[in-house]
Amino acid sequence: MCKRKLTIEQEIQLKEKYESGYQVKELMNIYGFKTKKSIYDIVTRRGGKMRTFQEALEVKNPHRKVSFKIIDEPFKAYFIGLMLTDGWVHKNQICLSMTDKDVIEFVCNYFGKEPTIINKSGNRKQQYRFTINSERIVNELKRFGVVERKSLTLQPPKLKKSEVQYINYLLRGIIDGDGWVRNDAGEFFICSMSKDFLEWCKRVFENHYNFVPLNLIQGENGIWNLRSSDERNMMLLYVHVYYSSFGMQRKYNKFVKRFREHNGRD
Image 1 (cartoon, rainbow, N blue to C red):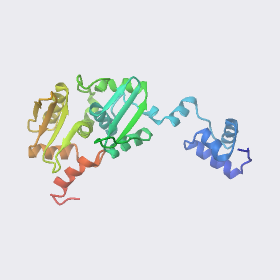
Image 2: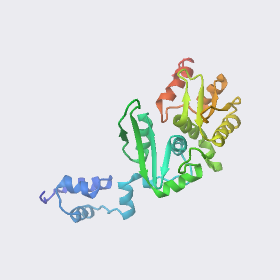
Image 3: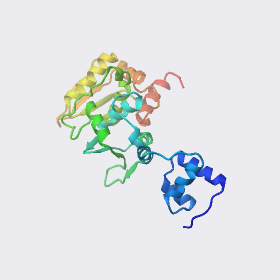
Image 4: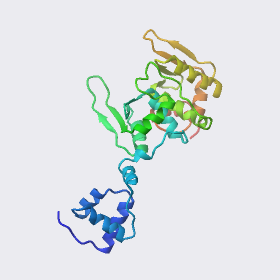
């Protein structure tokens, strides 16, 4: 790899690539330079500013910009719902695995990550995994009940007043994670080992969205199920939770087929 002199146009292009997020090593390979200093000199000569150490980390790891100190947008509520059901944390690692590729890609795109494909074995379907390492995010998620070994002790999320407006997206994440919707969208249920968690979900559905009382029962395997096949409840679930395309398409499409198509709407 030989050092070469760039034209003015090439130097301007290099600076613009750097400012758009290219890393220095990538630019060294593209333009044939052996040292980082060569890149630094060109960027500054063309009026650019070198990234600080923190900015460089954020370019390399976009998830460093994400904060869960407060839920201030739909995605964060949805992600927490997924993590409460299908996700797990271990030390500083945050993981979410699902067979629904679109959900993992949706999450990965937000964090600037690439999904990992877990090859299927035996009768198991192929899975897709999202993983990041962040001690800060792990600590921020604790307030919402996302902790290590949470299956048997899962507690309801503690929401601030300003976060309640996104509770429908939290519920959607919960259902997309550990819920089931019948193919004709005539019944749904959420399962969990934690009765406390499902009692909280039941209160939200009934008090916040005026659902007809849902059934909360424990199966012989010890798993609790919150379910309903009431027509009013299914309509309310569509109107308040599954009214738009967001995250998992498979369950959303069931509601579209039942309620939009049957009513002759787009």
